[in-house]
Amino acid sequence: MLRRLTYKSKGFLALAGNAIRGVEMDYTQGSLRKAIIMLAIPMILEMSMESVFALVDLFFVGHLPDAEHTLQSVSLTESVLSIIYSAAFGLSMAATAVVSRRIGEKNADEAAHSAVQSLWLACSIAIILSILGVVFADDILRAMGADERTVAIGTTFARIDMGSAVIIMLLFLINGIFRGAGDASMAMKSLWLANICNIILCPVLIRGLGPVPALGLTGAAIATTTGRGIGVCYQLYYLFKGDGIIKIQRRHFNVDWSILKSLINIAAPAVFQFIIASCSWVVLARLVADTGHSVTSAGYQTALRVVVFFILPAWGLSNAAATLVGQNLGAKQLQRAEESVIKTAKYNGVFMGLVSLIFLLGAYPVISFFTNDEAVKEIAVKALRIMASGYIFYGIGMVMANAFNGAGDSWTPTWINLAGFWFFQIPLAYLLTLYFDFGPTGVFVSIPVAETLITIVAWYFFKRGGWKKVKV
Image (cartoon, rainbow, N blue to C red; front, side, top):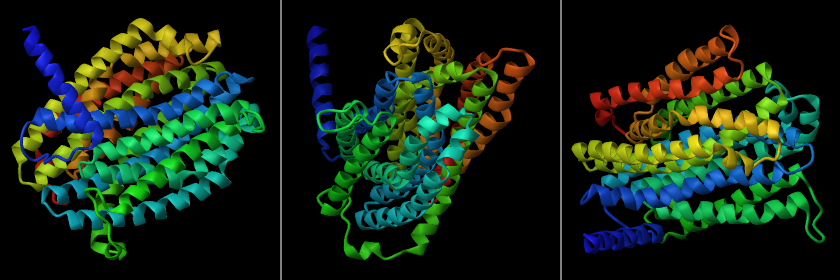
């Protein structure tokens, strides 16, 4: 028995090593377990690094003077940035769906052509979002419920972060291209590089070092934007170098309206899908701010940051389903596509179940790492424990959503999100908070209840199988 376990452990470690190095594999053949591991390990590490961006800021900013206001500035800005993230996620899912389908059809040249068209589309949208963020940063913070002290402290931070929409968009989009091609290792490496730069720059720019002045909250925004920018430069170098699965040539830059139309048809509902979810979080954040106070808001936002830290790795695992669905549908392997989703959902459910135990039993020490304010801690711990009760359903629901998106069926999860968040979660939160006098706790409770319902509905539509018939 021991020898067998040792053999399996060595086999897994070898497979993990190949996944991190980026060894190429045909994901339309062979063991599904091996395919999921080869994709999931770098994707989990990739999204873990994305979550580190937020937590590094939270850690250093949480120890600045006026932490109550600096934390709220960061948290409210991130809530608004979630709209930009939504656009980035939607476009990256469209790129993943189209590129993976072409790779599954063994048409690498069309995959490269589609990748370039997605870059044109993303840059056009991101420039507009960047301009709006720079111009209206202070008004946006006020609209989110920030008091004037928070606006005064946080406007420059918000202006820099929101103005970096182009960088954020490209970082997500290009990684979506890599994932669609099955090159998950490259997506991971670019975010690791970006995070290493951010981790180095954050303490230097926030607290100052030698001739570098202490920039405080503004330093956090500059560090994050610079780190992401370096990651994008690395992505572009690798993408245009031509040594990977995607080999871009000059002729691919010719605008192809038929591909752009296909990308828009997938991306538009996908962007709307993520915006629906993100805007619901914005509404909940405003409800917490209105029914509580700045300490309650800071506690809630701190808990959300910790939640996101673990949700993003789970999202990374669920991204494996998108790539496997796209490539196997392209290869006409419909049953294999379905089986890959079910297996990935099982793995993600187990992972999120373990995370929920950590949060239920160890919420206080986890929260204590990010803030010294006892009042903020109390709210954050309570919020974290309540939200953790639905983690298993979060994990399965992510896989379902990514399966639909990977197939190019981005409308199904969009309608599910619209109904689940706006016609169920938000009314429930207001009902519990105001009518039943739960206060901000009503918001905390509404989150796991709504996510559970959304997952059940998504599973029902997945089993119906309409996603298998979508043409991309």
